[in-house]
Length: 396
Image 1 (cartoon, rainbow, N blue to C red):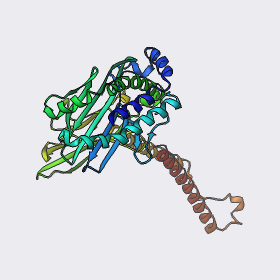
Image 2: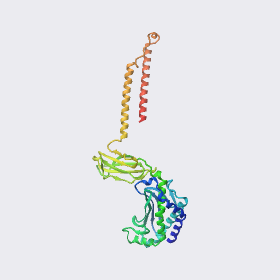
Image 3: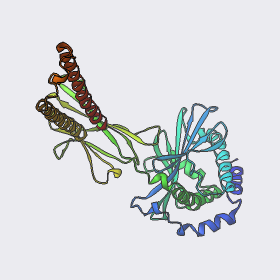
Image 4: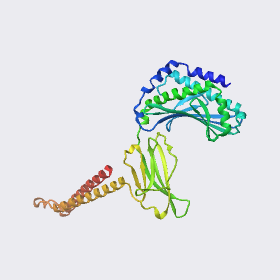
């Protein structure tokens, strides 16, 4: 059965071999701008197969470019799900079709083969097998590949050179599995081609096609909060950091320039928009809170770290308060100036009619007219101040 499967794999893999050969020759020429970074970049496939008994098994598959998931295997439809518009790389439709057929055949057959050999390999139900397959690239050149297998969460075997080798400490059980696998020369040839040719080419294509996403920089937002610790007399300080991309970030509770080694960092979780969120905590005595601050380092900040003091206020809030105070003082001064000027110009003095009209205008009417004029002018001045105040607030 294994021999039949390997022959089918080989036929799928070498279909269109001339194209594969031509692209392999161009591999050293492909040097995307993103590959100038110092850290090696990795593309790997992860397979997790769970076996409940001799007749039930479930397999999950996914593809990852570094820590960014790019592919998912749909076990119901038996198809590859491309999670980004650029997840296809620059592979032709024919090559992608062949790879999908290869994965479909492999993931369909793998559980049956394992169940058939479970007794011989001394696998005890229920058990889980994990496989990681991938390659690395550094400065635009392939710099290594790997295929590792784990049984029940522990290293079990790997493919090195051109053969299967048991992991250190895996014992005779892993050695027996490797002995069986090493008998199938065709399987080893296929694995070598996938590791040395197909994976590096696909990784190079992904880096070129997904360059904009990989080089995306989003600045983090950070804020702090206090909570109750399980122990009496202590507080749980929480620093929240969200909205950052790429994923690598450094967050630490500080006292001055001294790192607080008891800082506890949670898992970096994804946001819906592709950015990340992190929660970092510090359990301290209630009387030791003063002077603590949360410090955030991220590539998007270009060396300008975010520092949030727990017992203080943010610089933005301080600037807003200062702006409000200055504006209020200016309005009070202007109001006083207007009031003084109005007093000097007798703005609110009662209206005194000309003697020529004194016989025609009643004295009481004159006073009412003067008071009305005063009220109108006061209302006008008040409306000016209100408008200026509202405009100042809106600008804040």
